[in-house]
Amino acid sequence: MRHYRNDFKVALSEEKLDLKVLRELCFSGIPFEGGIRALCWKVLLNYLPLDQMIWDSFLKKQREVYSQFLKEMIIQPGIAKANLGLSREDVTMEDHPLNPNPDSKWNNYFRDNEVLLQIDKDVRRLYPDMAFFQRPTDYPCQLILDPQNDYETLRRRVEQTTLKAQTVDRNRSGVTNVSSPGKALNLYPSNEYEVLPSGCEAHWEVVERILFIYAKLNPGIAYVQGMNEVVGPIYYTFATDPNNEWKEHAEADTFFCFTNLMSENRDMFIKSLDDSQCGITYKMESVYSMLKEKDMDLYMKLQEQNIKPQYFTFRWLTLLLSQEFLLPDVIRIWDTLFSDQDRFDFLILVCCAMLVLIRDQLLAGDFTVNMRLLQDYPISDVHTILAKAKELQGGS
Picture (cartoon, rainbow, N blue to C red):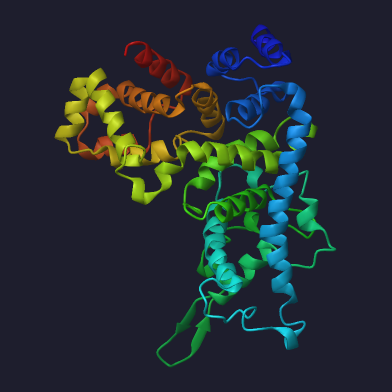
């Protein structure tokens, strides 16, 4: 293992990185020690340039750009909202929250709140079996928490919007019951999810901010449920980097790496493209096409039982298998996916390998048994799965 780590150190010590060499090394798994994985992912996801001499200036610029996004998309609208009502006499119809014009800034603000609520609901339950996302970050965003900025934070926006949406229940005798917004929306299933004190922020709040900024910058796709599962492992990898200089900027770096990954993967999230060659339907069919080529008996069995690929591969493909395995195993799979030049073609091979590895059970099972197997995949050893995918790739 030490020898293996040395290979990485040698590859990463080059002034200009050799992407081919790095990809070959990363394909077999990347060491966590020394922040090697976090660094390699930043290169493999086309964030860091290959020339290390320009890293400092590049990173400084990217992190400034991200700070600017926070100011423009969270802090300034929040200040405007906080100031509303302080100086009533100069509020014009244009500035008024009740302005019916669909292009008015308030209309956008309230529309954004709907997106924010959906993100909030999803990020609060990110990896519920791990405490990490509920814990406070060591590096809360000073720009966001600056007491000088008196503005409506995302945290406050969620509370306010939820309050307005609280469930009103009228019983037969005409008495109105207003239930607590948190309970009504099941936003706070346990004490773990309670908001941290002022000056602290949990890791899930950082992920919420990343997804909100992404949604604002990409209105064509905005936020689709499941993106939280794609950003989670990237943020976790960067926010647990043993190198504090990198760890401190996990938020900005995650944002750009997630954006790059989504630029390759976003078509799977766009409903209107479902049936196009870049859409999810085509990708799901590709898993079966490959299975037909590799294992005709198994393919025929699934066809006979009318088990369609969308019943299980939709989740496998759109979420890059992040829901099928424990987080450390997901991260290991992503080492290989990210290092393959045709990463989404290799993902199809991995899905095919997962089917071939449980062929005996599938061939023996009926529809119900097989659906259960596919929706709760029984093999947890991802190394076996990746080795089988590589074998299938070699045999093509």
